[in-house]
Length: 301
Image (cartoon, rainbow, N blue to C red):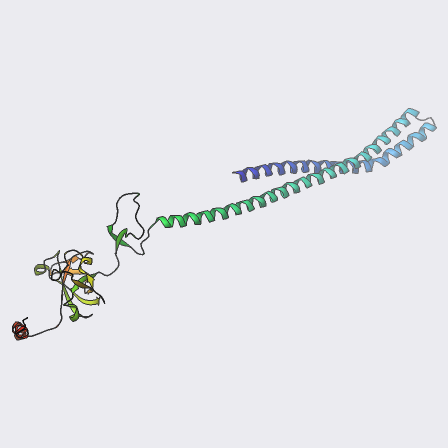
């Protein structure tokens, strides 16, 4: 990564400058030590020079020996003065090295700030692009509001183009309670009310053997529909244009129970409903044809 490479370069440059600073510190310490020694021995060289000059005047020593002592004293004084130059030079080198280190760190910090600003801008662009892509993907996905089973699909071909408003599929929820949908004929709707008992015969199970499912009328549509809008097999042939009422039946149980076992009920099963409208005696049942014939007697065009 670029960051790791820059980090290694900075560490190498700082390490190089720190090594130079360490050398300058050693040179400075050595210069101070040499100057301190010369400062201690210079008086001795002066005394030795003066002693030889006095002895040369009395001819106890030669003039050349006195001159040699003077030369040594001058060399030590020059060496002493040179240490001041060395000390000043090493101090300047140390200050320059420290400035380089500070400059390296400052440049690196500035570069990191610039990179952070660039990365923040890039992150903002990517986040905006991510939101855009997620929104675009959400438009390509159809999500059901709850778990269920797909019952019918309008097409099974990949890449098929459908018209706006087309019902692509029917979803049967897994957790919803099953209800029966039946159709009341026009002549029966006036006697049906919510709450009436209902017995449902399932086409998949012979009611003589497996029994029927108990339920109650839950809802009766406020308006009738044309028979052509009903499911196949439930249209009435008593009229050229029969009208029926959609009625919902709530089930007492979500399974069909027998003495031996139970059977699951599934959406789409065909049923026939027997709605209990009331009760009458056997005599009323037997006399009902007579009463009907009596009321219709004498009606003739």
